[in-house]
Amino acid sequence: MKAIIFDLWGTLAYTEPFIGEVIEKINELINEKEVFTKLRRNWYTEYLTTEGFFEKLAKEIKLDEKTRIRVIEIWDSQIKNARLYPETIETLEELKTKNIKLILISNTTPIGEQKVKKLQIEKYFDLILYSFREGITKPHKKIFEIVLEKLKLNPDDIFIIGDQLDTDKKGADSINAKFILIDRNNKYDFKPKIQSLKEIQKYIN
Image (cartoon, rainbow, N blue to C red; front, top):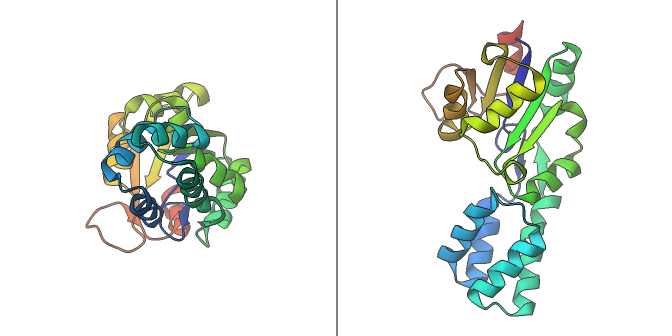
């Protein structure tokens, strides 16, 4: 095994409070859940700054300036609230000593990139792909093919590790790569799976 592709949220890191709570606060403030959901979904594959996105939302729903600024404050609160799981750094450092290439792929808006910078984990990865930069989200095979092409890897060379069957596993299946589910709360009857990143070692030794 030459490389591991990691998902970000629910795999290496989390936000406290959960992103869903942030979205709910914004929905309560603007009372335009359907429009906000639609625009946010498009934002995952659109290179648009936070300021640009909320200007677009404000025009769409005729949001006053005071409320727009407050909404941005709520959205940006995610940055300071991003956290790594306790074993994340130790695991990444251990994998680097084994000369395994590490890749991060995240379905995210620009705030995901800001969180990664805040968490200071960029240095561990040979390649980082964000959906808003690539214009593609997981599980589309194209975003995984970028990894294969840039790092000159074959699907047999990699493991994909993530917490979502509908994006991470389907993505692995799209290129016929091996997949390991990280299921921290032991919710799924699925194999192979791990509950902690420390368990990765048994698959690579």
